[in-house]
Length: 500
Ligand code: MLC
Ligand code: AMP
Image (cartoon, rainbow, N blue to C red; front, side, top):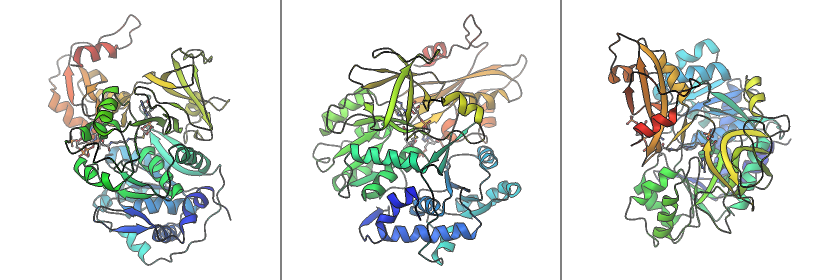
């Protein structure tokens, strides 16, 4: 019986007593214990009716069982669907309806609300709390710790990750065993990750960065993971001398630089600092090198494609560039209007092809066809330029997207919510530079004549509908939105006017 991901990432560790995850209270879970826990959880899934291909929604705190549950889904042939813990009930109902999961695992504190929400869809609700207790772990505790692995091939789905979209509706990116494994192999080789590494893991585990880039590479290499429930600079500073690897978004690095304890001496055991998910400013790269002697390795990726490019491990890591296409991944820069390939040195759309590229958007064949060409190339919506030596730099985005602290925020989704408020005529949501988060969200709002809404009233209406990280930090009430001669809202004018 073969199972592409399970055989590569999990099965090899069944007899290993080496440490795998160390959590905040100092508890260490060995690799073998992790494999046994995954088997117990797989029994719970199957006992609750999960069959191969079924979706398992997980909106749970960052605890070890959430990762064991990912392994359990792989072993049982199910599709793991992690969701941001900040999502509101209103946001969740869309995902549950679109994904029609067999099981929904939620934080214990949300059990009543989720039970009501899931009832019409027939999904079973299990709980997993921040303290590691809940109905899911309780059921697993008494289950057998061996599970007969379900056969899954390279093309079968392993995960479904929702990404917001320019149309305002989130799209479920379907990722196969091959997509995840090929990328884990490419990154593990390139970054020379081995069982001698100890990774500081402070990212959330509901995105490709914290879940696949960090966990799949660690599992493949047999590395140790210092699994932190949250990002806290002082806790990271304390772990650095005992560790070799850190993966983070640029905000991690700017916040670490604010701590005087970050020194060359502190980092002498570290092997590699990786940054991605958002642009790393050259000034952060330089300040980090000056302070620690380490050149942050910047890489570029997307939920739909896994990782696409990386600066070299051995070789120059150049600030402001995202490096070379990963082995097995093809990148072309094309004319955004015609799709024709452009020569080196010209700015165009970054397109990607390879085993890393997803299988399409769930329930959205038209959207998939718009973004994934018949030739297998996926249009990223990012604008880039390729140097003669193949090195790629991202110079902008064709998609209307704000990246705040590594989270993607699509203005259209927020505009739809604001425009629905009684008394609002129209709105434009845009990003402005922010020292901590890279970008932050502002909204320009035009009211209907004779309405007396103020910013607080608008914020109160938005509050229950959108996760907090998407909330505009400021609402600017204006008489009209700036438009060009074609009638298109000029967000660049708004950015220039309010950016300071
Ligand atoms: C938290 N808040 C944010 C925010 N994170 N606001 C805007 N942008 C963010 N990124 C808000 C909360 O809503 C809350 O608001 C307040 O800040 C404090 O919350 P917190 O949870 O204590 O924040 P903090 O721990 O400081 O979180 C910051 C962070 C976190 C940078 C550690 O955002 C983070 O872990 N980001 C990483 C995201 C990530 O993994 N991205 C990868 C996507 S995959 P209030 O109003 O309640 O005070 C991808 C592909 C690829 O992009 O290439 O990797
Ligand atoms: P997501 O849709 O959450 O997977 O985010 C993917 C997007 O994040 C990409 O399309 C890029 O716009 C952005 N991104 C990821 N890595 C980088 C990087 N190193 N530099 C700039 N943008 C990045």
